[in-house]
Image (cartoon, rainbow, N blue to C red; front, side, top):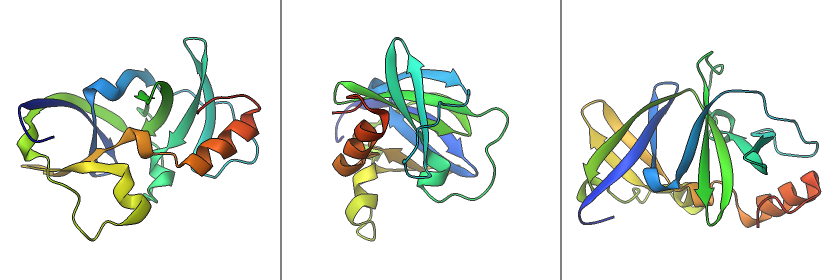
Length: 157
């Protein structure tokens, strides 16, 4: 992201602000409890049926180790990731905002490995730092295989 404008869907987890590229967001849904699936990591809430597809749901609060309880107004953000859908539970969805692509800074060198893979970059704003997520990398290939085995069908390639 270096030239032109980019649009981001912004959301919160506690006091922290995150975003995803608008082109990766399929839909924002009111929170409903996903169907639990045995043998999944604790940050994987389960699956939901959305538009005739089984979609895995990640609890971002648990995935990122954020403290606190999920608020009553939580949302599920359904995202497209390389032709498949993945959903993430967030505390609230804030807005769609257009920014200059040049404002998206790469993750600092302190972020390495898997943590760096989650991030597209960061944007400095008046309200603090906005962390832009790379939704394609919220699940590793090993986690995708684990999910596929647990659900018993090809949910995520």
